[in-house]
Length: 180
Image 1 (cartoon, one colour):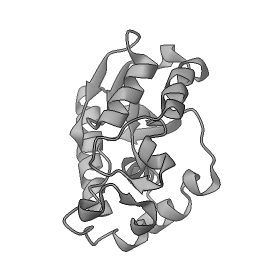
Image 2: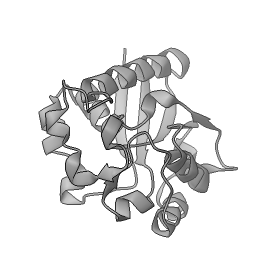
Image 3: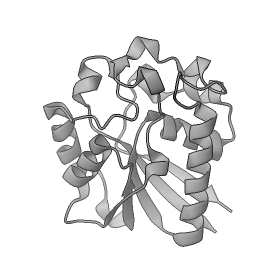
């Protein structure tokens, strides 16, 4: 049993442009993010996608709709939300230090290990319900890093250190395979 995940990060938000970490706040796509989401359609092979699942946070929902609306079924799932930064939701990005919150919760928020637990549960759901399907996910940084940890069997420190965001190595979809 296996599922192929094609992972897309939501488009650039107004918070991204203002160097804020949105966390569990809804977030609003900037014009750049809208354009990125629309242009993504031309960079991917839609016939390789059976279903789209996005985070239930507005910025991910909007990104999914700009890319996939009227082309694919789009479902929402809160298990692939961004990490809850608690008191740091919407605050300056320099305050949100993943390395310090692998096991320790953000103040009044959650830890990255808790995100991993949510994403593992979501992966089990995919395998039980969508065996041998190709699922596009539209989500956020922490769930993508959790997929890196889960599928590549690496540590959180490795996932954080090797994160594409550090090198600006964006691409139109990352491929992950989950198996049971």
